[in-house]
Length: 116
Image 1 (spheres, rainbow, N blue to C red):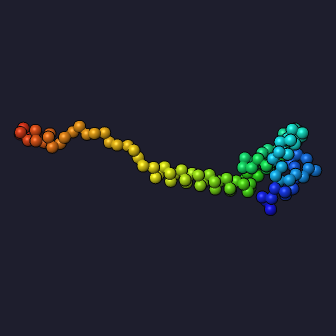
Image 2 (image 1 turned 30 degrees about the vertical axis):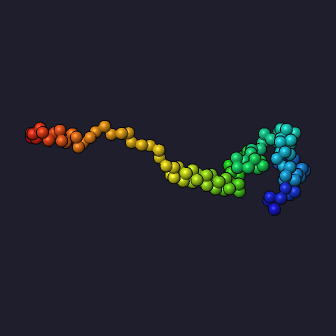
Image 3 (image 1 turned 30 degrees about the horizontal axis):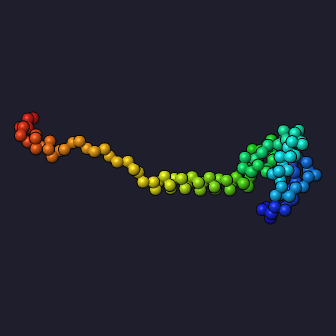
């Protein structure tokens, strides 16, 4: 099970280290400091910081990363929610009061003859 905190994961810095999934993030920080030469050769996945891959393979990993789909779905849901929220917002804008009075103006102009 992927979500099992007791599942053992192999350390990307030292292949002999097998760490429980619940402790894996802490172990990565510790091993990064212990193995700086190996750390220089690895890149962190932008979708999951637990994914450390060789720098040359990062672009391939990004296209295939299983966590990318989850993140894209979350972003899509947030964007859709924001659009819906924006669309449902009621405008508080009000037109300024009109100073024209066409009825008064037309009665005043009725006294003057129309000239073409």
